[in-house]
Image 1 (cartoon, rainbow, N blue to C red):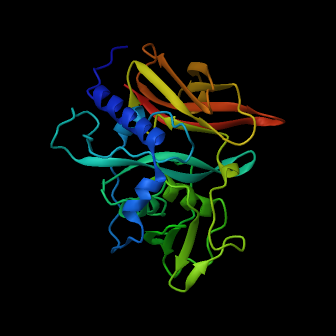
Image 2 (cartoon, rainbow, N blue to C red; image 1 turned 30 degrees about the horizontal axis):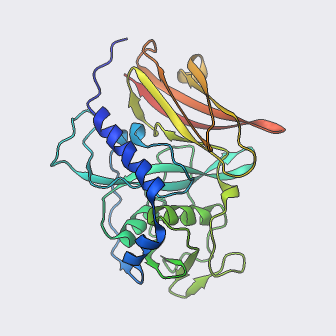
Length: 315
């Protein structure tokens, strides 16, 4: 099979390095100093989907699940255009959505693109708004319980992150939906501060508490970071992601590339899990062009393997 050259390789590498640096070097206390007592409130805007083809191959393996993943100040062109200095600029943020597993609903992370912002409270609000039903997940296997217009503002104090909600959001959606917002806003801010949810009527309690931290037990057993849903690949396929930080880590992750209709496995492999993360790059030069489903799985004690999937195109 002959594949055209990918003009985005250099940009993908730069994006991956920036995302890795963001995870490794985040200093929440320093970042919070810039945004304490800063509140953003702004009118609703029509949702805007940024092209995410570039994000797929550029998102690096995250060292900590739920850590911030920002890649601002990069020109992200369309799928087949070379990067140009004057092109549109985006930021990549980690968002969390609900997916079904054998153990019940769990949180799956997706990296999505938004307009960059030097002010972190507006950026955090933009990340939360990706959870709303008019935006939502890229992967059709994921869902969200947050309605359109649910999030109205983000404020950061010395002791907590306050997420302002529309007055109609009462009661607060039950977990894991509430944890969607906790993980997403903490990731956007690079902070582990507890999160409080407020409406115009007052603070909504979570399990009797005015603020809540992240619950790692609600993270999916295995989660594909790369490729993103709908990504296009050529001769090389890179698969990477993370496993749950709770409980014993599996030693390997298995993956298969299925043809449409589940008829044939056209490529497969396995890769070791290192520090709760995994990654493998393999040649798919012999795979015919078309649309395929990537299935990634890890064994689960006494149950069927846990899986995550992505649809991708080979050209």
